Image (cartoon, rainbow, N blue to C red; front, side):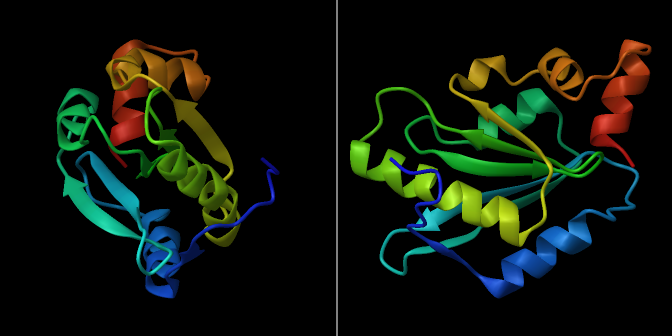
Length: 143
């Protein structure tokens, strides 16, 4: 599959929400979870979460459906796509990922196949924090 394949468009209001989320100033952990609307062929908002840890975030994501996730600081995009999903669904998400990343101007992009791997440690390693663990987790999930 070509990396430039676009299966779903991105809702303009979602793009604006993601741009504003980059400047998230609340003093709690946050995440935006997105999914594709197969019928409308569009990436849409699924959930906005405040005050959530990586472990709680994992619990919010259905095991059988890929998702796009953004956490605010530094703005980090995570594509969760477990192995063994329907090929049509996998292609829809994979084909839409690049368009979403471009439209929302996301620069830190990661893919995770097993949601159990989404931990504070995983985030710190992938975001390349090299300081105290507690500070790093706060920096990722609190602005």
